Image (cartoon, rainbow, N blue to C red):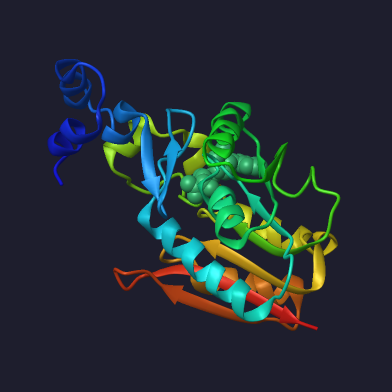
Length: 237
Ligand SMILES: C[S@@+](CC[C@H](N)C(=O)[O-])C[C@H]1O[C@@H](n2cnc3c(N)ncnc32)[C@H](O)[C@@H]1O
């Protein structure tokens, strides 16, 4: 569907105003103000990343791994929750309460609204990745900022989506290393870590996993465009 068709289908205000915003380079999802993700509808505005198809795939694979490897009430935390699309979908699909962290108060406001709108059970924390957490989890899931500061990205993304959601130091690897270095205190012995990644980052993240977590299994998996896009780290001790 083209952007104009999308607006005509979903925009509820004056279509001329919407077309003007589109002309000014605003993403259709921000103009419409909501987006579908994994069969649920999420409010979005300039304070949150627009949920991506790849992230639906991350959620889908995580659900399948959770159903295969864990039974009962699995404890999950979503780091860098943005709109809440990951945590809210996991809460709904797995029927569990999920914890979620973001450093942006504005993003958390959107996530809270989305939680109510979708009647999910998510507890939100404001803070830096693992820092506000005092529990132990079975699953850590994260789609952290992973774009390197010198990488060329689409103008529409650069101009409109929050830079806090996009960029990270160390060639975009900063948050993966921070999470893997510090996550042990927040994990049960048997655990799954699920990451969305930049397509060149798989091998480096695998090295971090072995360096900081020792004897784990690591699976780097491809998206529908056949590019490395997900890392799953398992421990079954
Ligand atoms: C790539 S976006 C992902 C948002 C959402 N999970 C999704 O998949 O659509 C990364 C999120 O991480 C948050 N973030 C950035 N730095 C952070 C930090 N130090 N601690 C917690 N969250 C952070 C951003 O505010 C943003 O919401």
